Length: 195
Ligand SMILES: C[S@@+](CC[C@H](N)C(=O)[O-])C[C@H]1O[C@@H](n2cnc3c(N)ncnc32)[C@H](O)[C@@H]1O
Image (cartoon, rainbow, N blue to C red; front, top):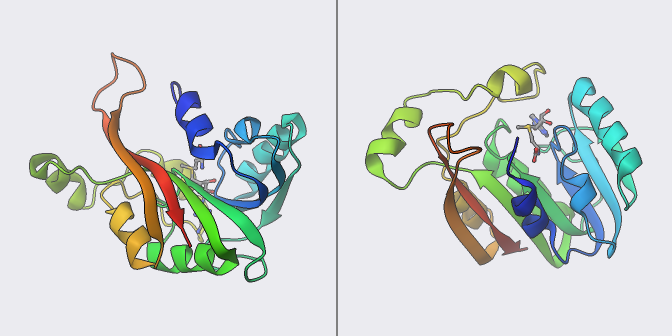
């Protein structure tokens, strides 16, 4: 999606070591990983996305390995990652609590979760509509695999991150609008949480 490069760069800035990214979509984050990252393990359930991620991995400046799997059962050892990335994906996983518990399990003690997510609006009038069950148009794309939960834009993802035991170190909220002509803007959170 247009206009997100700056947010992707900000999400990944200063990460280092081994990083797991779940549901990387088209792999649009890969080019923004800093050189201090030694390996990205991209866990992806959908073959079509995995193919696009492998293409993006070939052009990335850090090593990216795309592996089949789901955020709710990561094929990764306990405590083996320095960082974890959830970018526009916690709206999609079937069970946020399970996925976040998995991300925390694979992080080393004090490892960091970087998140960039679209979330429920804090303005009640806006929050009500998606809370009734509206599924984002992206659901059509991400719902093609039985392990995908579709896209639920009304989730309180920041609360879920905290409930999973992460400590929020930084978080900013803003409304994202891809172009001035496209409405409505979607509320986003971007930040760092410590395992
Ligand atoms: C909206 S796209 C992600 C966009 C991408 N992360 C980005 O920043 O542009 C949702 C992604 O989540 C993946 N996905 C869906 N269900 C998943 C699950 N249970 N575990 C991991 N990834 C999942 C989809 O296949 C897709 O790659």
